[in-house]
Image (cartoon, rainbow, N blue to C red):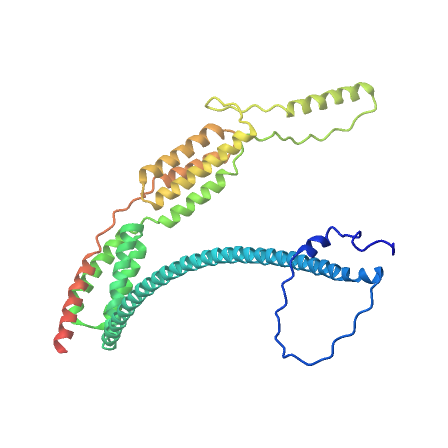
Length: 390
């Protein structure tokens, strides 16, 4: 109320601010002035006495502002502290990550250095190998060049002599390994024809040895190995055509004219029935006891075994194995006699097997190495003469 005294309106918050001492203002010395004295103030009323309380409210506002500033400063300091702490934490983590990256980079660098060192070693080894290969290639080229130079001095005579030596070696191989006297004799004849073309008296001993060897091979070439081989192949084909059992066949008799009487017709029908029944029965006499027939699968196995026996005889003929050759043919003949008794072609096949079996499988081969030794002696002398001429 306006009638209340200003002292009754006391603010509890403003009291501490009013109680705070106000620092005295410094006195400023001023020179005395000759001024007239102020007039006396009129007496103040009660309303005018309450005006001095306004400075107290201003102090409260100032205190509040100071408090607000202090709180803001405290909050600012806390925020700055938090920022510094976060910055320090970030710096520490960044430092740790940087250190780990540096360590990984150092490890990678060590591995790279080791890899480079290994590559340098491999490159050095490769250079050594390449240099060795280059040196070997250089030596090989020099050798080839030397051979080419030596070949330029070789004439047609030397080539013919080399061909004769090859033919003689091939003839010895045919005689010793293949046991083919005809092919060996033909090769020796070709070599003798080349020597006759050369027309050198120094080759007379070689031609004399060739004549002896060709004559010996012709004497031992009576056995036709190829012909016997083909004969065995034909026997195998004929044996596969034999039959264990052949079904009986008959030709029906011509029926006579039937009379009109029933008795004659009955007698004629009985005669025809009896003739047909007799045609189903055939009696054949054999010197040996006949063996029971084989099942179809056993017959197929028997045919395969016969074919294998003939093939085994062929292999023994080529390999010069007379014992195995005769054993295979004996077994094939025994099977034919035992199982194919009802086939009429068996006897002719057995005669052919016995004929082929008695042929000599391993004829004695003559020694034809004398001509090759004589040719080597001539070639050695011929090359020595060429070196002397150079």
